[in-house]
Amino acid sequence: MSKTASAGAGARTRARELMVQALYQKQIAGHATDELLSQFHEQVAYERVDQAFFDEQFPAISESQTALEQKIDVLIDRPLEQLDPVELAILLIGTYELEARVDIPYRVVINECVNLAKRFGSIEGHKYINACLDVAAKSFREIEIQAQG
Image 1: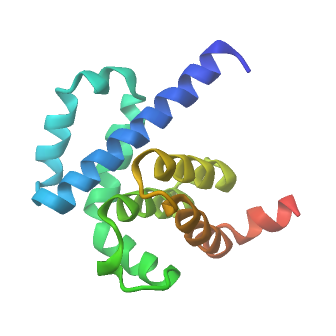
Image 2: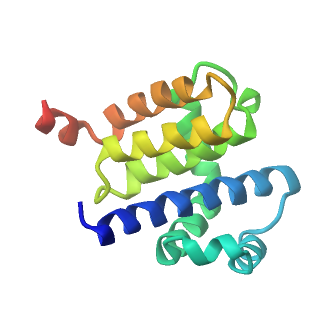
Image 3: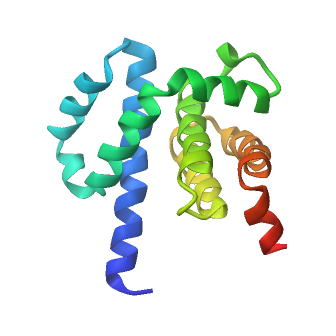
């Protein structure tokens, strides 16, 4: 892999990490999307992320959170209110990407979200994220999964 490709992939990973933080903060403090965007743009960490990716995805996820939560609610085995805020943030990102970002392979989406859960979530949270997004992928990416056999 070229240095540019890995730097790009790393910048997207860091953008997702910031999204987890922003979505968590939205849940805990109730901040508006625009307020969070402005706040995160001022952080030093924002300089190292794929800014276009963050600026496109975070508002899309934040503004469609209720609709995404309804989709997540069907995928999980417990009431949505019982989800840890970090796990919910990661599932919001994963569900959005599986549904709306078909340019990103489903395996990449799941892997990125599992890694986010390992980094920010509870000890066994990554296994739960993996299971939920696997179900979501079968729903949103059925053709892609079948094509890969």
